[in-house]
Amino acid sequence: MNSKPEEEKNTAQEELPELESESISRREMLKLTAIAGTGVVMGMSGMATFMSLKRADSGPGSGTPATKPQANTGDAVPFYGPQQAGIVTPQQPYVCFAAFDILHEDAGQLLKLLQEWSAASAIMTAGKPLKEGEDVTSPPTDTGETKGLSPSNLTLTFGFGPTLFQNNGKDRFGLASEQPAELSDIPPMPGDRLNPQWCGGDIGVQACADDPGVAFHAIRNLAKASKGTAAIRWVQNGFIRAPDGETPRNLFGFKDGTANRELDSDAARSRHVWVASSDAPAWMANGSYLVARKIRMFLEPWDRATLAEQEITFGRLKESGAPFGKKNEFDPAPLGQFPGSSHVWQARSAGTKMLRRAYSYVDGIDAGTGDWDAGLFFISFQRSVKQQFIPMQSILAKLDALNKFTSHVSSAVFACPPGAAEGGFVGETLFRSGSR
Ligand SMILES: C=CC1=C(C)c2cc3[nH]c(cc4nc(cc5[nH]c(cc1n2)c(C)c5CCC(=O)O)C(CCC(=O)O)=C4C)c(C)c3C=C
Ligand SMILES: [Fe+2]
Image 1 (cartoon, helix red, strand yellow):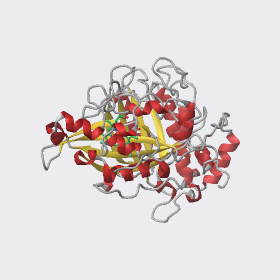
Image 2 (image 1 turned 135 degrees about the vertical axis):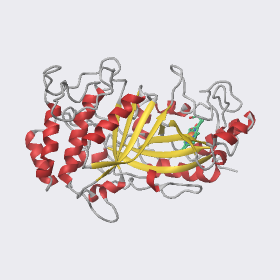
Image 3 (image 1 turned 180 degrees about the horizontal axis):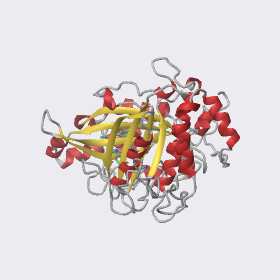
Image 4 (image 1 turned 180 degrees about the vertical axis):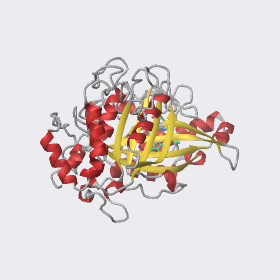
């Protein structure tokens, strides 16, 4: 049988450092561009777009760009801040997640892409079109389908994949020395059925919103703005919704996310979610590591399993979400309360925690079998992939009763840097990093 969970391994209690809040000066920008090297000429059109995105609004029909992003009003989540939005932000019901590959090896262009994407993200998360009063002589800047809609709590969360730092031993952008030791592919796990086309990516962008069209619009417009510089490698849409204040249910009908409540406090998030300033590398302080796994769930056999088998599989009751032998979802329960091979027992036995932000997906029908091609697009945020996700998944892959009904089909890891200061850009700490 399984032993009791070890004491948590990640014991450092860190104070979150204050990020510099001043925006990047013109001089620093020039320095960055110089550091970035050869991209100046090719990057000029990008810079022009960036500058035009940042110009103040002159009102509709004026042919000038959209307004400066507004402060948080109504259903807008500010893009700028010490930490990126979309991590501890209350989970919105829709995700459109895209992994991009960079098509060149030019650090200057990469820098400009991040600047453009950040500026565009600030505008889109404020619910504004990328440009007001488009010019009839050129293709519209904004694709237009969300015009007039509210911000819908759109968040855009950016992360850097291992291949951005080094690909096949090649230091593509002079960033190899900055690659976090935490940032490498998840090692193969028993039962994995990964499709390489759905794995990895140089940059991951998680767009979450209250409206699936708003999430898609954001990814579509980032892709459009990056044409020739970056190409989408894979995209995953997802949905999850719960009655107000309740935990959402996954496609197996169980409440999924109950234990996230343990990470509601700043202290718990500093310990389990946010990279501390004492963790290496320094540029990741106030960031977090994102693991994405597309996990196919076999709905047909699950729907034929008895309620008792379903509940034993998770170790929780289907109706209430309560642990075995308890009445309510959040009733505390010792490990012994859960069936030994149950998903919750096995996850807990890793002795660590992570913030889960998973979405259901339905990608139609499996052409070979006629079964649902559906499951969970699992996303977790953690301070350390090596101390949190990997040990837990290593246990689950071997011993979890849920494995009978699931199969992991994609995997990706991204280092999500801290948030951007107003007027700055996501990834600025990486490009400003001392060792560069
Ligand atoms: C490696 C991490 C995890 C993977 C992969 C994973 C897949 C997965 N989970 C569910 C459904 C549920 N998970 C629940 C709890 C739970 N799951 C993980 C981690 C992974 N899950 C953790 C850390 C926990 C919390 C354990 C605890 O401390 O109690 C639950 C129970 C309710 C809850 O707390 O959310 C459900 C239900 C599916 C369907 C799935 C893959 C398809
Ligand atoms: Fe789980």
